[in-house]
Length: 305
Image (cartoon, rainbow, N blue to C red; front, side, top):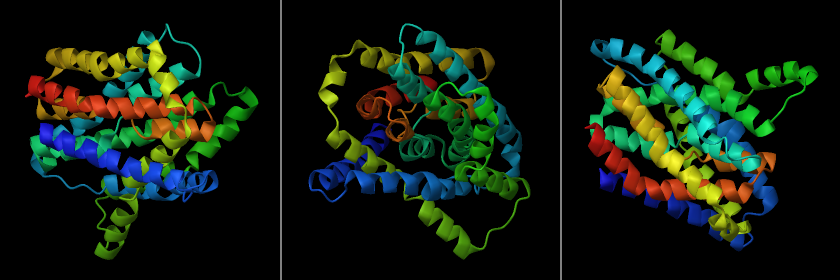
């Protein structure tokens, strides 16, 4: 298990270094990086979203799949509420960054390999269900966090804009495929998977570029960073675990707890860049939570198994 997490983390950092190198050498300029962000948000991520709905499962675990849906929803609500309460001492944009990182996790690059190592394809199915809610929440609640207060007369416009977001449209397509059990032609399926798989490496290259241009040293002097890391990597997983002891101790809930306890999603930094909010701090949150996961995830898995 430690090897699985370690390999995933090392892979992330090697790809991040590519972004740092590209930026330092002038290959990836600010304008190009903005283009990469648009490519990620509007093309590759929607394809990845669609691909996450194409999982197959044995009918014998159908009841567990149903549990996966409401457990995932409840887990997100717990993360949102618990994080909000714990972050009351922090104000301003850094609170937004930490809260976003607490709620939205790195499901794909680290989460799925860990679930596969623990429970095989069945664990990945439950992780995929959790990832569906990630997409729904990140493009609604996540966007609201970064945009802050929305005027009443702008609300309708923002709702329409959100509904027309490529990733939300991709969710609608994915749900249709899953509910109707549609069979996608192999050539189309392969193309969707191929384009969607670009999202992980592309997001880390973008973060590497952001890190290369920031003054990250100042963030390490800020107590908010360490408080946020403690909440994200220790307190929130502990809360989910304690609740699971009362509710259910099955592969379904264990899978969701594990994937909900992964490091902060790359979107934490990418949204910060897009909305120009504490970009350096956001990159450090992603960086440090990913590093700490080498220690925290194996410990969590050891407790759950």
